[in-house]
Image: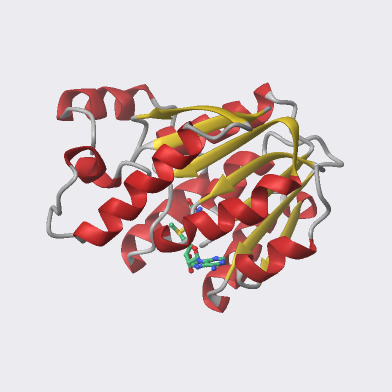
Amino acid sequence: MIVTDAVSAYLRELRPAPDPVLAEMEAHAARDGIPIVVPSTGELLHVLALACGARQIVEVGTAIGVSTVYMARALPADGTIVSFEVYEERHDAARSYLERAGVLERCDLRLQDARNGLASLPEERFDMAFIDGVKAQYGDYFDALLPLLRAGAVLAVDNVLMSGSVAEGSSDGHWTEDQIATARAFNERLIGHQQLIGTVTPVGDGVLVAVRS
Ligand SMILES: C[S@@+](CC[C@H](N)C(=O)[O-])C[C@H]1O[C@@H](n2cnc3c(N)ncnc32)[C@H](O)[C@@H]1O
């Protein structure tokens, strides 16, 4: 965690109990070692989607659908979240959980590499995007996503601080020096981008939040 243990513990205490489906998804992810957003990141995504009145959302990296649930629950009944996943077992599990969570009708789950799938989506139609795939591919996702966002749309990107090693600039044994350098260059690119106004928040593993101008 990036914040102190005391802050993490406080945030855990503050969290309302998750509903049974979300709790089951979290247990599944913990049991099988599937990376998912931490609750504070999920709640941030939910709030961001509500704040921008999102009707159309696009996500890279469904896994078993935890972040998808948080965002889908912010959508109106006729809203849609398009979410890409390359791992069939996770894509299938997400479909099942999202159905049980009562949001499947709002979810367009695609078993496809986002780097191919994003190119087929309509330009300037999305109100929000969330990047949470392979870190080395973040630049490719961003290049494909930017044209899809309408002016005023929100972009959120997870794991931009990599447990803090991005700030320290050196390997912690988990992330390599190359991965850290790539992450730093990605963050600098987005924060300095002419079409974005953004900031990096120390929520979860670091969430970059930006608005497209
Ligand atoms: C960190 S997990 C996503 C977690 C999910 N957003 C959540 O919080 O519940 C990243 C996922 O991206 C998937 N992935 C990797 N490369 C991808 C790609 N090119 N296109 C779509 N999904 C990809 C992985 O299989 C993995 O399940």
